[in-house]
Length: 146
Image (cartoon, rainbow, N blue to C red; front, top):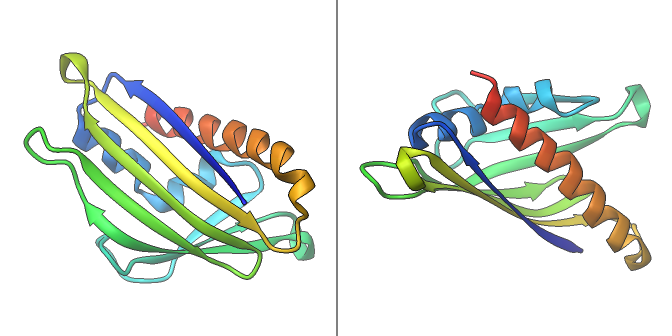
């Protein structure tokens, strides 16, 4: 099991940063070899379920997630989305917090706990480093693209 934290400040109002980070299919556009399918009808809310399919053909796996907390930012209050990872291979949770930052910009905090089934603890360091890299890049790209 690994945990990591990412923080970013974006030149966007918090509601726009929130929208960009919580449009789940967009994650598949910015994470290599990943496709995201939302399984529940919109709009996003507690109970929304989606699956990120990562890999190539039969060498892939599904990362099934459910939104368990959904509080969009409003009038200077931070937004918080919590995802529970419920796949066969990937377990854990992620939290996306979007709060007002300096000058009306959005401050994003992404926290995640990640467990990969059958992966020995000796690989926690490389898993943490690669997850920080992949998710950090994804967050940067999501915040840059309208």
